Amino acid sequence: MTGQMPDDLSPFRGAPVRSAPRSAPVEVPMRLLVPAFALGLAALPALSATTVERPMSAEAFERYSTGKTLTYGASGAPYGIERYLPGRQVVWAFVGQECRYGQWYPAGDEICFVYETDPLPQCWVFYATPGGLRAHFSGDPDGEDLVEVNQSSEDMPCPGPKVGA
Image: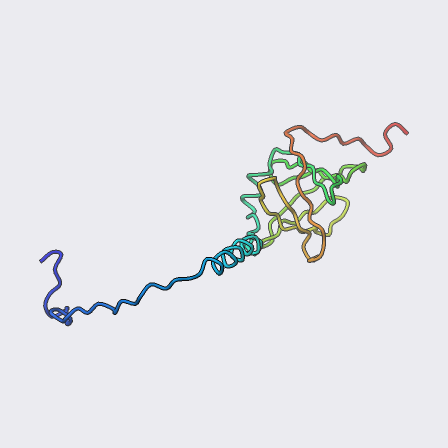
């Protein structure tokens, strides 16, 4: 009986099959199709703009960043540089300032950093983009995102305080 339904499970067996009535084809003037097509194309960027980005997981962030020195920018200007070491250790410096040593840890969708000079966590949500990382500071919905502008496997220079003074 493979491939066949038993008679007791097929109550519609033998029922007449009816086809739906056919209607005449609808003719739409070309002058109406062109604006409709243009409106559809115009909506495409809006649809792609509403695509929901997903924050990077801690595991993905760790795979991406460990062993790298990433330079971040904001508003087209350099902002800071961070070296990501094994064991979730980091070295951070704002442009033109001293290095700060710290570590990062996951907190939900956020990656939080704590530095030896400041015990208050600095939490960010990271996104992977085709151009590199994008980071949004948590708790500041209107704040400007940082973007990865350079990537290196080199250590970052960390001169001590008042070197050369």
